[in-house]
Image (tube, rainbow, N blue to C red; front, side):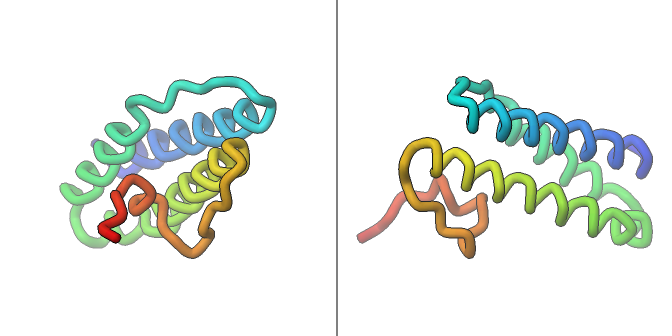
Length: 98
C-alpha cells in the first residue's frame, strides 16, 4: 500500500468508528468484527513503508488510536460501566490476573 492508500484506509476506519459511536449512543447494535483486522492491516502496511514515509503517518495513526479509545469509552458508557480513560484500548481485552 502507498502512503496515500494507507491515509485513505485510516480515514475510512475512523469514519466507521465515528458511525459506530453514534449508533451505540442511540442504543443500536453495531458490528465490530473485522475492525481489529483492519487496524492490524494498516499497522502492517505502515511497517513496510520507508521510515520517512511511515513517520509522516504518525499523527494520523495517533488520531486513529484516539478514535478507538473514544469508541471503547462509548461502549463502556452504554454498558453502564466506567471506562478508564488513561488505559489504552489495546488493554481492554486482557484478563485480570488478580
